[in-house]
Image (spheres, rainbow, N blue to C red):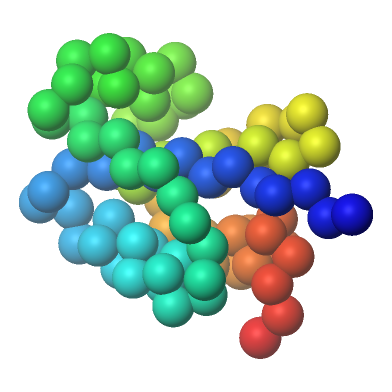
Length: 85
């Protein structure tokens, strides 16, 4: 049985890489939870705690492990989400 990945993406409205990554995730059939750091101070703090200085920040929870991807790194996301081109 394949465990479902949980994907959280920290974004802000004015971030074009964020929009691109959300579109990419949708196109690959990956569901995700979006957390807008401008609308919720708690999300901003979470992103900072993850080591972010910019958005997007993507957290992928799989098999009780947490992977953090800073920026829209399509190659790393593809690998972590077990996608094949």
